[in-house]
Length: 476
Image 1 (tube, one colour):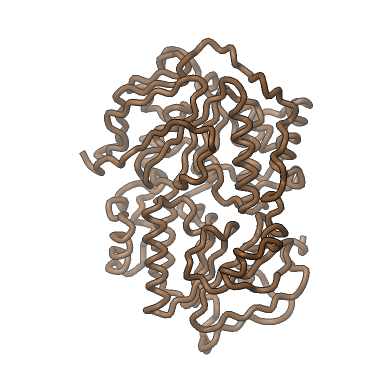
Image 2: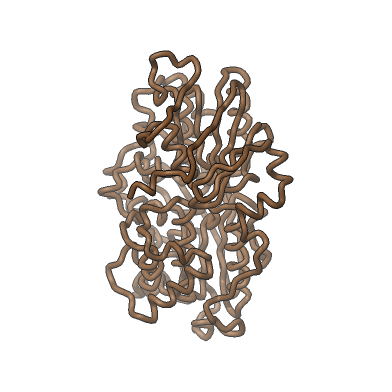
């Protein structure tokens, strides 16, 4: 057990005044472990962590961190469930977003909220916020604490392009004017702002020699060592016939059709007069800013949102509410989104997580048969994650979990793939690998793809159509 909290060699790391750093390495390299050690969350076996000028103030009080897993602290995860944000009666029982900032100075909170255009979110329920809005809220809460050293774990992930630019500019200004020093923790150096000074590479719980950002990006041998998938050939597909496709003869021509759809919760209008039709075999990108309603659209298509019954929605040739079960809809769709990732807090092996994709379940309420378990292992191999097969899902890094959930989305060879920010948290090599898998999978006959992203450069080449969603007015 103690090996989980140890580096191969003692860590020597000096951050000088005014320097802005980034820790960069592949998924599972030990980045989070290093940050936990720096914050004093794990007892040191030897050595010490010193912050110049701290005096008698504990180092932990002067260092603040923001990580994806902090989202769990915003919700009552013990009582939360996957579809809760779409059920009006249940979401009404959850806390409002204003509770996130309880006890913090109101003027400073208000200033940051205005900067991120979050001022209208305070009276929304936390469970109803998009993943991008939740990340912004966490960033605000962390900045208001005014730390001397700020650790940001993949802070730009989940933010739209405008928000990424604004956050980078704000952090650069704080570092210049208030002396804030920042450690970015990323799995892909392309996510870093240009004003970062130093890179600390890490792999297999080993600290590698530091580089400047330009030296790091120019060092092809180091990049190949950290991210071997960048130079690897595209993977196979578990013996799937490239010329055939499961369910290719299903008797529908339209995957879904939305006619003048409106979704609202109280005075909050999420979608208004939305029209969209996706036909069998089409590949679409779904685009829009944080909070524009993209996840709401997907919840209607994936039969998670009860408001589908109050709208004119056709799924796989059938009017929603005409008697088909949600499981008949879900069995045709391979799905991944941030809500599913947040709610999948199951202490079960990765292979069981992948197998749960056959049953569209979160957890192992039904045991897979021998053939299904074998196929789950094959898809872990395709994503080069077979080493995770018997590791508990909750003990993996965020990027490792994302890989496993991607394998889950593909495991039943679905005719429709809905992937909402699928490359979140993946390292540079795994992003390339996953992109190749998506492209090759969708090249097979009759496959339909809905791909959601804030990074246009990540859109697979097979995508030929796009739907852009603009945010509705916050109140009626």
